[in-house]
Length: 248
Ligand SMILES: NC(=O)c1ccc[n+]([C@@H]2O[C@H](COP(=O)([O-])OP(=O)(O)OC[C@H]3O[C@@H](n4cnc5c(N)ncnc54)[C@H](OP(=O)(O)O)[C@@H]3O)[C@@H](O)[C@H]2O)c1
Image (cartoon, rainbow, N blue to C red):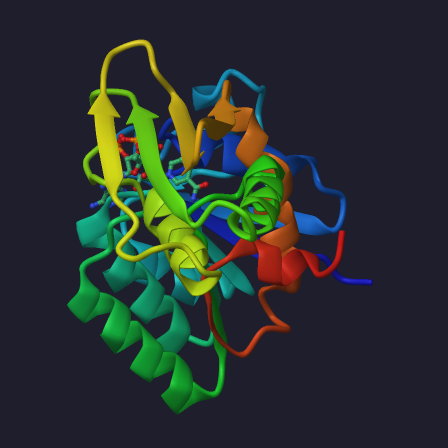
């Protein structure tokens, strides 16, 4: 069986490199290209300290899509870049799996329209961690008894968007499942943090805290691989990893 061809944009970044390593390590996937702004022409495996992969880093996604004809684009770049990349992918017949968060609303709408027009699918997933899927499910159970709830998200100080895409996604889940709206979201940005989400439910004389801690970006790899494998089969825009997992 032929392997799914994958390009990773932002492959040298903190998260993109974990995505690239996960794709490289999956026997049914073939990493055929990498995009960044620096280290152009260098081998991605060597840049990541993983040995020679034969995958040169390119600067122009359009050229790469045309040359390599991948099935899937994985993007972990920047909010201003990811929408353009995803649109380019959809219009080139490539399925986008976007991990970049904070994409402007106008670009999300343009992407939705392009996906509808082409009859294709796009995955815009704010968090690829399986632990976050479980957190969502635990939240819906707690909400049955505790509809008063607030979210605190903690991230490293270089994170560009606030609140985090994951906090927005959790806010939507809580509000759709009976929380008193709007659910407040508080953001903390400090050195030393990676990505942490805490949900506090309050009731008469008691509180419950549900918390997820991302300790390493390697936690996103299995979710990215799962999304890549499903990317060709989804229709419309999928925004939650939970939808890809079904009943677990
Ligand atoms: N969905 C999830 O599970 C998840 C998890 C973690 C992070 N994220 C999101 O992923 C995104 C990336 O975060 P990060 O911390 O990994 O960022 P980062 O370390 O700054 O990496 C960004 C990457 O994108 C590349 N890049 C930036 N602008 C580009 C452009 N115009 N053209 C081509 N490549 C470009 C950078 O290349 P150069 O270094 O060469 O500029 C680098 O490889 C953020 O939106 C973050 O919120 C999502």
